[in-house]
Amino acid sequence: MRLEELWEQLEARLATWGRTHSPWAVHFNSGSCNGCDIEILATITPRYDLERFGVKIQGSPRHADILVCTGPVTRQARERLLRIYEQMPSPKFVLAVGTCAISGGVFQGCYNVVGRVDAVIPVDMYVPGCPPRPEAIIDGILKLLEKAQAEGVAT
Amino acid sequence: MQAVIALLIFPGGLCVLLLGLAYEWLDRKLMAQMQNRVGPRWYQPVADLVKLLAKQETMPNGVNPLLFIGLPLVGLASVLTAALYVPLVGLAPSYSFRGDLIVTIYLLGLLTFCMSLAGSNTLDRFSLMGALRALTQLFSYEVPFLLALLGPALAAGSWQIAEISAYAETHWLILTQPLGFVVALIGLMGKLELSPFDAPEAETEIVAGALTEYSGRGLALFHLSRDVALVVGLTLVAAFYLGGMANPLWFFGKTLLLLLVVSGLQALFARLRIDQTVGLWWRYGMLLVLLQWLLMIVWR
Ligand code: SF4
Image 1 (cartoon, rainbow over the protein chains, first blue to last red):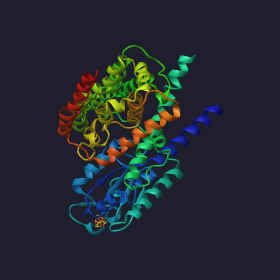
Image 2 (tube, chains in turn red, yellow):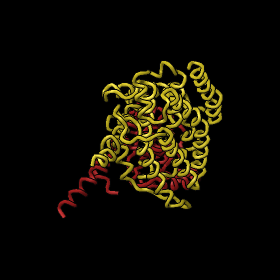
Image 3 (tube, rainbow over the protein chains, first blue to last red):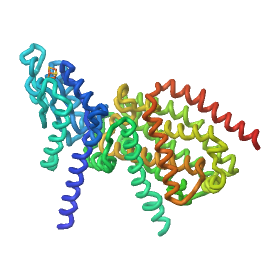
Image 4 (spheres, rainbow over the protein chains, first blue to last red):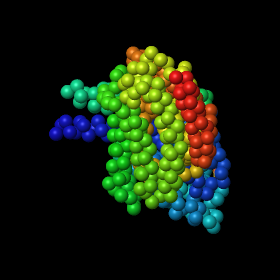
């Protein structure tokens, strides 16, 4: 019995270590003005080199751990955002990048906009800015990993 | 007992897996250095593997569950079997029989085949497209690659990997068959779907190719088999063209040199379109190998 517990604990620790050291991201634009997306692209250039932290941008949501969301959620994109979120295997995290993703920003109250990202899917970390600098995005990802580490990823 | 150890721990099994992960890291690190980046940490492939293994595996609707679960296993098993027939780290192959060169190449091809089947098993159009491209590419590089590896076999007068590498110990075939060496090395890149030939998994066009629907364990196993295939392929080319079996350190140096060339080529070239890939292999690759064979026959 004791041995089993120990084994389970070890397993959980190993899994948490793996998750926090190899976050693969998928990027989705749910209605952003493209400013935030350009910053995200700048973040994955050699100058900032996200591979240092094990981050890899993946094409398929099925391979990703982190959903990087930009912009407010428009009525059209809502369905797609939900679908992409559902397609990701758990444990999964959501990073909301930019003021619009946090609060709706300048698009707040528009007839075609649902609103901020966390009105549609749960968000784990917010990166403010219009648009946020690549450094801020990297900081957001690292904070997210710290949070995941602290939680031991209960999901 | 000895057979079990050879099968599971050294030089087969565990040792190949670890070697595969190490080579993947080296490849990524070298690429990063060439692109002026810092690159991944040394345990990155292990972390990726652990994470994928611990992740949820979703089985999409409309797939055949048996194939969905079985194909990654068959793929990994086939490359691990192939590893037993090649002189890993410069030691004599654990198993050897007449004609094992053909079996090894077949087993390496089986991995690509498994990936394509896995892609066409799902209803997703991206994986279907990726599977189609992977098969198209298989038919283009396979023949030149095979002929390039048969060149040393012809020179040694044997189709047994152990005998060919023993022959290559005294004859550096890269000097007598330079064209064959070039085609074999680039064919290896095609086989592993590395950068200029990565149209089957072009993430800007078809999401992630044949493996789009895979998550968790299946993906981890496919990644692992790709790494093992890299090790097996590099070992084969190094043993055939760069002076056969040698002491492990020296042999290691040779495969690392090959890896350096491969990652350099990856960093240098942009992705080829699928029709360009096919054209390249049938127009130039094939021609080069045939020229090599002609030279060999005339030389004799
Ligand atoms: S936060 Fe600024 S840059 Fe980003 S989507 Fe909104 S308006 Fe555009």
